[in-house]
Image (tube, rainbow, N blue to C red; front, side, top):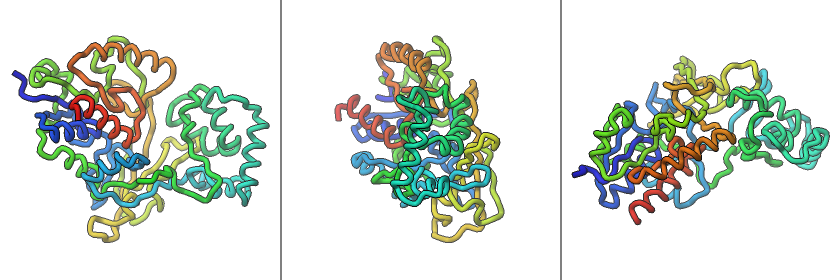
Length: 374
């Protein structure tokens, strides 16, 4: 007989939320992860008193009150607001694109002047309906901002020319005719005080977790332990890449401890020129206002340079390449997944879908409600 009602593959956000809901419903749960830590890509660890985001910056933001009420049961959040800076060959611009950006770029002072400038450049470009990312970006912010602040960064991030990327990637680009540097403009936002790892540990409290356990290498033995599997790994890997490999973008990090209290004065600085090899530098201490857990100023700092790259086996897959070809391949894998009667596929990799953290939580709550009838 099975020892567990559910085997959850992956101790990241989706897996942890599902496991918590299942345990609360009285189900027995085993959570496994091939990594040596819980938290998946939201994993943080303390270095010099600073919570370092090991897999890139994660800033929680949502307008979903139910998700916010749920996740704040497991962590207190600070009031961090994401206001990144763009560095183009030493010229600094505010992100998201707002009146500070337009003033620095064109010298305009009023929203009317900024709107007129964007409209003028849109008309000169002759774009009626955007057919790719380049045309979509120009229609939103004009040619000057596209060339300085979008093109280089985006092509480094995706490894493809902007005119070969789908328009929808940049439709969520915030553009504001106000002096508002709040990138997400969400009602609820912040970062768990003490880091994400503690939050995930609270979600998994009382649940058996096995780390360094690779599901696909031990599939038969692990399947025998449970009635159902919740799988949050890569869907194509589950099927042994039998239909071909889906494409992802990966990220490499160079992290340094610096003997200075302030390297760049902001949590995130994007390098938008094509010549700088990294996409951005994260200075982790500013996610917590430069303070340690006791509220003391920190004498050192930790930075991470991020380099985007094409995924290959052995790399961590980060961003699904959601173009038509990969969408069609995923649909074929989805057909196979639907035939796996005792397996549920969830999360960013299991569903081959770009998810913000609040969307991951929402999806996990919906999945658990459906499976647990709660």
